[in-house]
Amino acid sequence: SKNCAINVNVAIASLDIQSAYTGQLDCGAMNLNVGAFNLSGGKFKSSSGNITISGNFTICGAAVFQHSGGAVIFAVSNNSAQTISPNNAVFNNVVIRGNNYRSVQTISGTLQVGGDLELGVTAYDGNKLNGGVIAVKGNVTMSSAVFGNHSSGPGNATIKLEGSGAQTLAAPTAGHFPNVTIDKPAGRLTLSGAPYIAGNWTHIRGEVDAGSSTLILACA
Image (cartoon, rainbow, N blue to C red; front, side):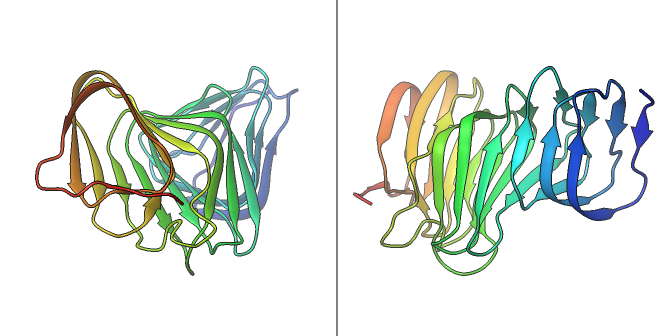
């Protein structure tokens, strides 16, 4: 198979790289807006800019996803469902954007984030983040006051802070986190603002510095 390159910013309904493909698709520094994303073969060299996914995201088989220092934004459409199946890929920065309490995003397995994680919404209040684990090596920031902030709760996914260096769990807004697990082999986790934990708070290992923050443990 031939290698391919994307050299313009694009918006497409779907991207399907099938198992028979053995080449590399290089996104360079371009920004991509994609509906459904399927990677079953070859190598996808992600953008150093932003890739926004509004539909289902699937990596399977021996396909390789390589980040280039950019961000992947999972932005579910209004009143829709989105499943994120990352296989064993490691992402750089990741943004999760809900879109009202009827929108559900489901993590299949573990979403590995080598950089930072941001939780927010595109519009409207509330959303659900269900399923597996988002394992984060960098900082976690709640950027929206209405993320998960609904009577139906923020979902049952787990945000796992597992970096060996300094990390911050920042909540400058009143959005609701689902389950949070701290499992740091080294380094300090600093709390900032007023993290609102609507699910379980599990501290396995690692130093936590609460500073002047307020940690809110509540039942969703």
